[in-house]
Length: 251
Image (cartoon, rainbow, N blue to C red; front, side, top):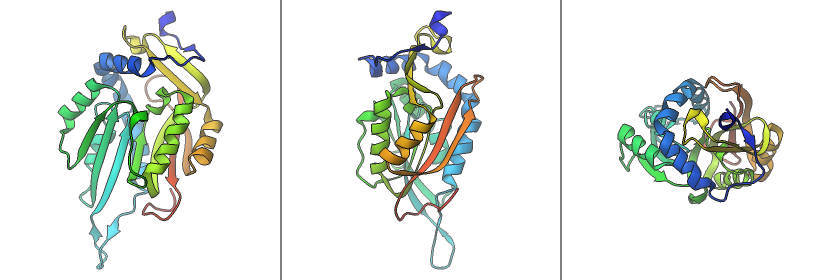
């Protein structure tokens, strides 16, 4: 059973990203079935952050279309987050950039949700290699994905996200509650090719990074037990880029 245990490590594998990609390519069907149990929890927080996006109104007070540029980091096969974003009411015209390390997941996402460039752009690769113009995104969602980065990369990514967001833009992201330099499991989900890596600053330090390094305003920070049949706890954060924007002033 040793290969099913979480093994602490202070060393970041030099081939971390290629190993993560290989694992998610290999275990995609198993992972997608397993992660269905997280769907309601993901949607609960997604709906909370979406509720902060203020609708526009025309001169008569009637709702008018608002254009939203959204990014999902670690989109998997697009369920449920990207699918939900693409299904928003007509008053919100959304374009989603859906990023994942796994080519298998990207292919599954395209098969399920299509590849209309007017609505969605699929981007395969390491989220640390992404680049967007400053002040160009309204919403960034990263669920169960940033936790696969080494801790310093997590901090750097949050700084970059803050730069990509427009003033008033929002980010929804979750982190492991416990502090760990790094941890490895050889056969995650019981899969022979399910090698996996996680790391985290812990609750207090993570919030410090969000506030101090990224300069974001934390609107929600809640520790919630995972819905995946484990006792894992995650810190869920909704944060906003300071400045004039079109999101609502509170949760």
